[in-house]
Image 1 (cartoon, helix red, strand yellow):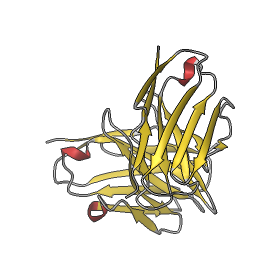
Image 2: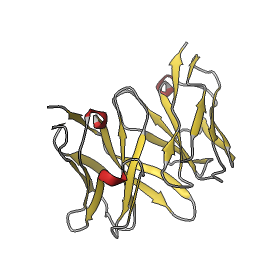
Image 3: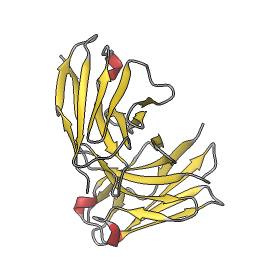
Image 4: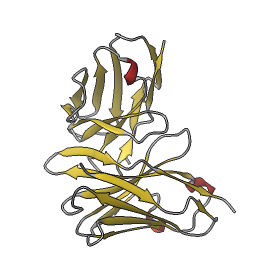
Length: 107
Length: 120
C-alpha cells in the first residue's frame, strides 16, 4: 500500500494567515492526488484534483502543487470558514489511501 | 445537481452482515465509479472499495474477503455488504461518486454519511 503522510497533524492559525499543509507519498504517484476538506459532522468536500486543479466552486485562496511524492495544499489567506480538517488522497494504485489529516484550528 | 443518500440499519450485531445502499438522484449512475469510504469516530478516512457502473469492482485488500459491492442501474443505486462484522467496523460510512479518466478527478460528490454501530 502507498502510505500518505501529512504534516503537520495540526496547525493553529489566525484569520488572514497563509497556511501550508504537506503530503508525502511513500512512492511516486505522479499527479494522482486529491485534497479534501472536512468539517465536524460533515462529509469531506473535494478541493483539489490532479494535484493542482481547483474543483469548481472552491475559492481561489486554495491551491495545490506537487508531483511524484511531495505535495502541498496552501490556503493563501485563512478565512473563518476554513477551520476544518484537510486530507490528501492518492489514486495512483489500489488500495486508494488517505493521509492522516491536518486539523486547522483557530489561534 | 447530483445527490447521494446512504440508507441501511444503524445497528448491526457482531458476526452479522452490514448492508448499505446509496441512492443517486439528479443524475445517472452510468459511466462513473461509485465508492464507499468509512471513518471511525475521531479517526481518518478508509477506502473500502469502488464499483463502476458496469459492475466491475476494486476492493481494499484489508477488507476484500468480507466485502461485496453491487450496482442496480434501473434503480440508480449501488450497495455495500460487509460480512462478519466486529466492533472494529463501527464507523460513519460514506458513499461517493468518483471521476477517473486519463487523470484522477477525485471523489467529487459525497453522501451525508450514515453511522453504523456494531453491537449486540
